[in-house]
Image 1 (cartoon, rainbow, N blue to C red):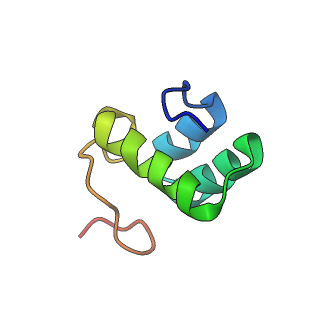
Image 2: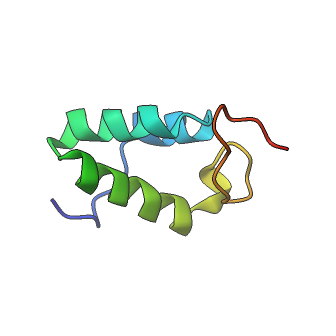
Length: 68
């Protein structure tokens, strides 16, 4: 798969809602990727588009999504 493809709207929406695992699952389903490939693409997208993340900082949320 080409990581230059536009990211699916459902994946971007999941990231905006703070649902990174859901975003990875959706990307796997949409593109037929293995877990590693999907996670790498989501991580790359998050690095390139930090404003697309729920907390807007580009940082990973701790387990449970609670910002301390």
